[in-house]
Image (cartoon, rainbow over all chains, first blue to last red; front, side, top):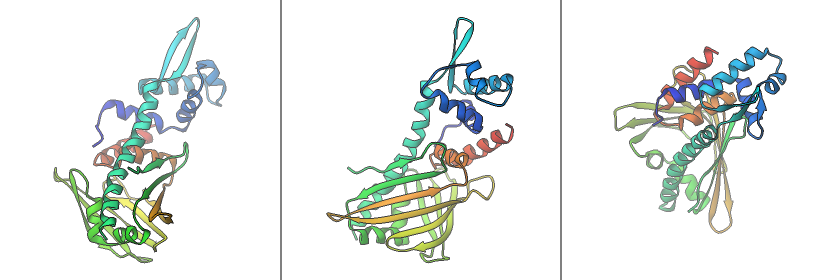
Length: 107
Length: 158
């Protein structure tokens, strides 16, 4: 049973937008400043900042101030959660397929 | 013990599930083709599965009812496109969603391996990356209903 909470709502909401998913993909192996991220998209700086706020609220990214700039990086917890869902699905099929193998052997 | 591996290519709209079974292909196919046996291996912790309809032929229908211990009832159902010992192709729908139209196309391929083993590879094709990830996030459990509803509600407001 998937737990219903505000955290999950934010997580799903964040991932439903293609630009936010793209930002997350960029952040998987690098850190960027907000300006650097904004340069990559044909939308306004304010719009990019808004997307980043949504991602931050969902705890998918973290912002750290370094001098005048803010450095954006992916939150380790976010990556763990995504792989957790895959593992859950795997667990469902493992249970099912273990039973299938046992029953097939009896035939 | 052999484990099922689930793969979901990033940005894609398919899920692959693969498992090597330590049993001959003919026996595995039988366990996948007999309604009574399907009920046994689809039933899991906290719920029972009843096969209400199962016509394993082109154009046939399948319909499995899942009743949870807490009284919830969901239906998994679809139409069979092909049902052979090497390949099963069918559609897959879930009654717990807030609306129709979220149909998955499922292909199950059975390959005989040396030493009386069989590889089963399942491919599930969704309409979009969003639909696939929503389904993965739900874990296909009871929460899928609410999760999907919420996901859509949130997505509509973006």
